[in-house]
Length: 364
Image (cartoon, rainbow, N blue to C red; front, side, top):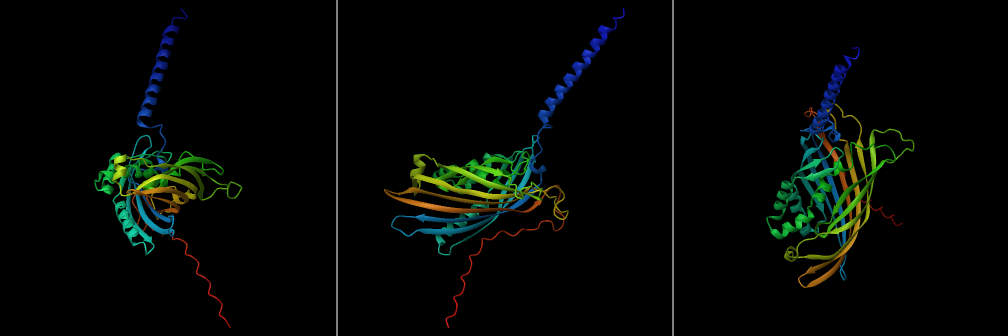
């Protein structure tokens, strides 16, 4: 009789254990479905947060044609790119709307024809508006297919041959590499400790020639040799890439006034620095957090050659180009509306002026 209460007690304990297991299973399934266990969005951004980046791109290009003088061109283009968080998914993915809000160009005065084409391209860029998906680790996963199609349609003027070329020139990876640069070199999941490093992908577009797919190594140098904490995180960027030519149908290629064949390109240098801010924002500028991104400076050097077909004639040309990219955070709005006087502009970096020649000494 002393064991008469044992069986009911065991049954009661079994019921309690089974209820707890079912409850835990339900909790974990519900957490996975609602994203409770997911990583927070990059930089802790929320819907409505936004920031503006000033972009400067300087290109210096030399084209060599046999039996002709080299053609040398230098252009400077400036853009304002606005990033606004439209929504944040439960898994931490941000949907960021990107819009080019301003553009300006400077070039050599004698290049009037090229200037007109470049100015037209800048005006088209000011119509670009697309949505990117940014994962919590800073990777841009995809671009809205509808936005990309609308952009290509606007650029091509509904010309089918031009559309085929733009489909290749404006691929998802190319657009992600360009507009996603403030996110690509920062991450929630990396320690950013001295001597740490990780890899990312970038694409250097060569227009109708193709792209240079680049593997970028991002490292945190130990500048003072002691690993002391700093107000900013300084990153060093190095990369190596391989050339991938554009592939279009024979019909689209034949419709182009110029055809580029036997194209080869080599990435000679991909180097730069990026600065991430770790300081809290002043109360006069923002009511919440701030983007970690502060600035990015890139230098890209490449060379190559191709055969240009015009009708039945062919001409081999070689080229060399130096690109300097500068991305600087201008202003932001995070965690609330701008207080009065919060949106302060940071001036665009200007190219270094060439030193003036020293005057010759007067002859006595």
